[in-house]
Length: 253
Length: 307
Ligand SMILES: Nc1ncnc2c1ncn2[C@@H]1O[C@H](COP(=O)(O)OP(=O)(O)O)[C@@H](O)[C@H]1O
Ligand SMILES: [Mg+2]
Image (tube, rainbow over all chains, first blue to last red; front, side, top):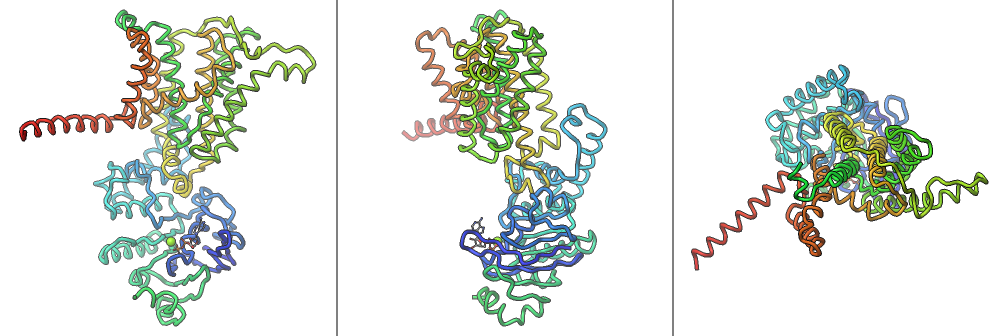
């Protein structure tokens, strides 16, 4: 589904990504771990088109996407969440979910102006999808509240719902459990697995919480100073001495 | 009507109020999309000159002048917007002020330039003196009708996919792009719409004031338009409309203050900006101000009791 070929990203003299090769097969959950500053967010920025590689290629279902603008990539079926929540804070939860479906609609301003059937039908469809998402992520109660005023947990779930509103095939999650307690983390893990099983999504998840990684991932990549230093199943990674030194050992201090 | 006239709001004042409301809305569009553009005065000038040349030199009716002015501004907004809208905030503001200056200087020297290019004597914009003797054919109902239609478009815009994209772009550009919104397209479309509105106001105003000159559309005018939006508030489209009304009517209503009029006018504006930072049309701002005033009063009685 997603393939990275020797992807490098230089920021001035800093090699944020160094010849990264990665394969995310359809229907799988791939984990990406690594210490802070390893380049994980940069990798997701490059896949989602907010940033572009200095060299290398990113293929999505065989199509090169590394030079495409982000809205193209979204419309091809890649959605993401952010390490630091980036909701449209002044808008309601419902409006956030309507916006997320932007690329799935086609009604123009003129349609809206004269209430064409196309506009009315599309608005109804967008609202139906939005209420489904609200229900699914237990947000129906807060649909009319400003996203920026929601409690942290609701914001996290709303961001996930918003990513799904774009109707993606591939979902990129950047530290989705940040700030969550173990119970919430496990519930999120269940949610991710349901998305894969029931909706046929493919997931790439950046995570520090090893319990979540073990719960959901089929395969793990370990990034350190912009380089992939290991790759394997969760059990293989847990035993890899290089990984323990670079990351896991450090984490247990 | 009689009452309005008694407080200084004559028909001509009302006409300017309507024009400035349209200008406020043209500012609102760009601000609502997160673009701090001060290009509206420049587009107003392009509209005014195009419209007047159509009605005067080509004997066209007002509506042709209006549509012509809007069209020329809309078309010119494309090559301006594409490079300039990559900039943000104060950089965008400065670049668009620069655009206004370029327009002013081009119109100032248009006849000489066109003359030397064609080898004939050209008399269209008529330099620094500008065009005089424009027929006064804009009527109040034209302005009112235009404003009503624009208001309707605003309402529909906010309920449309495009309008939601505008708000998303303002709040978080990268996140909007990740939702599938074409940020460059959205910004440029809004810039065009804003230019078209400003141009319409320019055409209608020119056929009211009967004279136009390049100096009418400089930095002062750009800042006035910004003030309509900021004073009215940009949390809804009604804000800039009210801002246009109030800023135009206030000096007239205050005419009894004679030579102190400027000071009173300025003080009122200052008070609004300080105590209602979200503008006049902003329920949250009013309720905050209300609790603040009541809070003070309660505090006063409390200290009184203690002493
Ligand atoms: N836009 C940028 N400009 C310059 N340096 C950047 C930029 N984005 C990230 N970096 C640097 O790249 C490195 C990797 O950052 P990041 O991808 O955020 O790491 P991680 O998500 O793994 O914690 C860091 O050293 C960071 O400072
Ligand atoms: Mg990160």
